[in-house]
Length: 435
Image 1 (cartoon, one colour):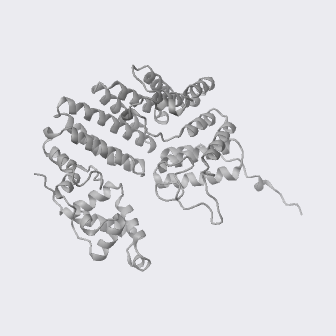
Image 2 (cartoon, rainbow, N blue to C red):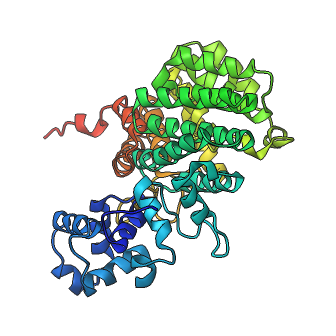
């Protein structure tokens, strides 16, 4: 029987906060945001609010009536749903394992949550329904737009649970769990990459490849190798090129994977200064989207990359010392998308940017993207404009936007890109007024 040493309401509060990937400080900020103006004036400082959250979650003190009302507003839940919930057993096992509890993941008449809780107590009970639950859970967590480091913290317990289950699972279920473990590890690897943890990115990529090999899933191993090729900032250009080539040498590879591997290989050649090889890879990867999708199993379809194709190609030109070509790509892509500038300028300056996202109401200059991806794409644009010595003010504005967004989203790759940016001198600074 699962037991915990804090009240159920306290455990549920922490479980629901962590499922949204909010820190205690982040929840404290949200309490201030949802408070009315007269309420906000009476609230303590953010540091004190974060300490209040700790006390509530440790069961040291139950929120008062006004505090409970603010918590319900912040979570968008009624008081009963926030502090009680329908099933205490679900709260117990989520509290113990730190596996995210995603409200609404399963319908009320399904018992995947309770089934998984029983499997936590008795791993030999794991079945295909448990595997499907974890597949849906990993997919739901991956769609949350938060800092990459927060996503890593949420996905690690999922990987640990899958690893624990597969040791006692039946062969058919074990294969499903191995595939899930591989995809979870690959996603963690990419988030470590975005968070600037090169060692972690490599280690989790190795796990993803290893889990696929143990499950004898050649196509999944190819998928992991293609994604490994995209970790060029963590692995270096030589290893990225080798991973891309290795992926295409496998017995099975989809058209989409082959195209992505060539784009990642092109990036490796660009960083190494190998212009001809880079251009050849980009030309070979330029197959029509409909051709890439035909016959592809959705289970092996590549996730949307952090770098859209236009950004990756433009980045190759920047790495090759041809920023003017990169600017042309960005201008064409922006015109085609109808998004205008990545920076929306107006009388009041740049638009307000929400935590983890691009300009309010937009997904960034290339459609819906995670905040860290938008930050990197914007930093790449700023780099291209600066290197091309075109529109200095635009380059500076893009750099400021990328910096602000990177800080909000923990986008280490965007910050590293900005560190390489050198704005040309301001012509107005050299003007001399002759009297």
